[in-house]
Length: 438
Image 1 (cartoon, rainbow, N blue to C red):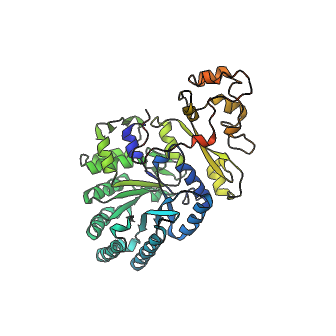
Image 2: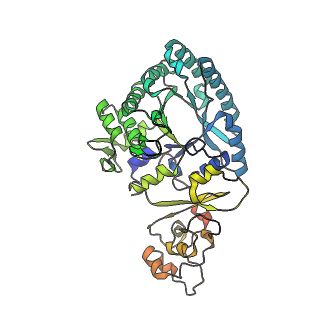
Image 3: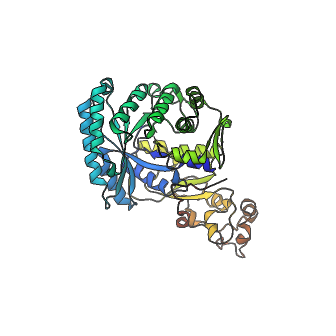
């Protein structure tokens, strides 16, 4: 992946598996988040999105799995009027104090509040409520606070947030949903991006951004926004070099060839944004919530912007949780009662020695049914396969650099480049700089 796109994608996806359309159970969502955090693409992963009412449940799941501290974006409870909105913010502030202890299994990095629609109609009441929220979350709390309104009123909300908090409150935009009326127009999105850039507010999005480019979704029955469209538009808006009309055209773009990325800059048609500028603007252009982490990652691979790094979940029977109908529907064949993760870089040559653990001769896994045969009960684990020497010609064609190490004198001897499952869990690159894959 080129550095410009890597700068865009770093910690961009907040995992919201508890929410529609996935609606996974807490054990399933927690298990997947932990697995994604240990994958090769973990540098793209941001927070786990969790309602304030389910924080205790999430903490119990994290402790049960012995997981390292989970970063959480906490959603305050819904509110129907101004008083309920302030009360929900007070409850969220209390939860923040409970969980942001050094010994807690969760670390709250962001809080998301949703304004009731009637509060947006009364500007004076809105500003009083927002001033109260600012006082509840001082800077030393170390937590970002985002406020969501309606897309049609995003400019008014941005002005109110700036007046009340001076940049301490962020603006959140809902970019989709499960019904057509939940998807804002490109004009509304552009207006929100321009308003957040003009006021200097932190900004994030949620919902509907599973795929990189604008596309028609048959399930929802309308055209959905793409996360590359939206976040490139947000970054160009921060640069001040793009007009309102250009942002609308960028948000409407559905041609993959119009987007180009290299190490120095990201390009959309005649407009360019340097990697240095992207890294600077990403301090304010934060992330988007998605109930799927696989879809954004896999679509980048399909478009040729990311390496074909295979990430799969392997069955290891346990009584951790019993998947329900929703999990089976979303995961397809890959549902199980416990998950672990491994990876293989397809087509990448590995040199003899420890680095061979990063790649494997692919034919062995097809022949034993442990890699490409599907995640089904009875399939052998990757660590159980016997030898890649049983099909040396195919091995040599697939992994030329590994072939000399696969010339075992005895047919049942294990290949020297065998990758153990635990060695595939390599240390991930620092979140500030993703791996530079060409």
